Length: 476
Length: 72
Image 1 (cartoon, chains in turn purple, orange):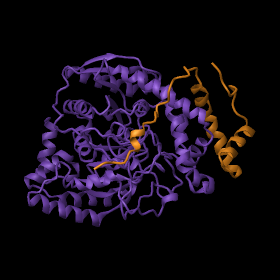
Image 2 (cartoon, rainbow over the protein chains, first blue to last red):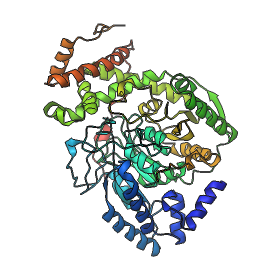
Image 3 (tube, rainbow over the protein chains, first blue to last red):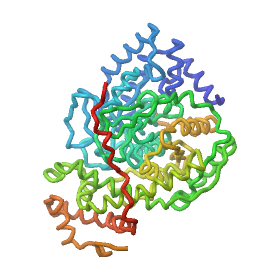
């Protein structure tokens, strides 16, 4: 434990802001009896009430239900019933995740009053693990259309600077974790929607392997690319949250029946001997100078921890982006076709453009994109015969200003998140520096299918050696 | 390499036909949004039309086992 981490822990024991603590630290203090789930939940709700008015990270705050869950967790822990590392931990869910009896709007006018009767599997699993649902977070409309300023709720803002965007589509989840409203949140990721807001908000976000976390009850964006993933402040907390919600679900056609290991036990702190392939050309060609310098410096940290790092060349980013985007918009149209034909004016402008254009993709284009996906994935998997992990930038630039129509989805920089989306591989975005303007920068670590353990171990080792993830935005 | 689509941007009239085929009957201002969006994705679609072996399979290979009912 670094001196700074030890100081944070000591401050918590002495009654400092509980919102500054992560899942692991909260769990330890709860089990010591120093604090209770009710204390932590109350602190989170108070902070949200005080500060979220200018961040818009929540669409719904479930204060009463959260306090009831916290009292139950408190009683259970006092009676010696321990449901595991997530017991008593407050968390948030992106608003495209169904929650029984709680508004699940996907941040859209189309679903502005939607109250599902059943909760998504991921919500049920986190509840069963003893987690305390604090509320539902803002998103790009239906997890793709944004940042939009023409929806029933405003877009979330970046906790590091409210004049900037928090990335997306899991924008509210990223902002809420970055702002210390909750220690963990669930996002969804189709082309980078967990990792982008994690990168922009200075937090740690994991897109696990395709099929690792159930998407049952999560509104679809692109069937063949959709993932759920944890967003926390550290890799260790991602491990705790992933352990609470991973596992096979026969009700999700994409779910894969693979054993769920003990992710926390995999955090040995050592990456000595690991072989890392550095995909430098992706960010060298696309990223800002600050990102290039920050990622290169991070690679030196990994090397200093005993990993061997070699530069390798994979297919150009544009090839992955072309295939992913074509697949995504074609499937997106099939999700929304009834509404886009009958009530296009009820979509936000950005989502409407993305959905409509998917209807113009021909069957031949979709099949060609899927054939291209096979080729690209095959070549990427071949790299894992030589390397345990691949490393590249998490995002190519710091956050964008929060200006209506300021971000053109189709003209953004090529995204280093998309190759791992297309290949369905686990990929972790974690803080690795700051821009001169004080906005977070991010590193990305990817691994073999279902080897989240090694990815998280490397992220945790990096965070044991650095302190970027401990930096806190000044919101007061 | 064979291509069934000429390597030139679609005209507004062609985009209108594609929209009609997709069941989209759009008011003029929303049609303009579609024209702009299609101009962005059309180059992607053209780049995807590459020469491939006829036997190259897409990524979504059918697995009949997925549709078996769960057994106790």
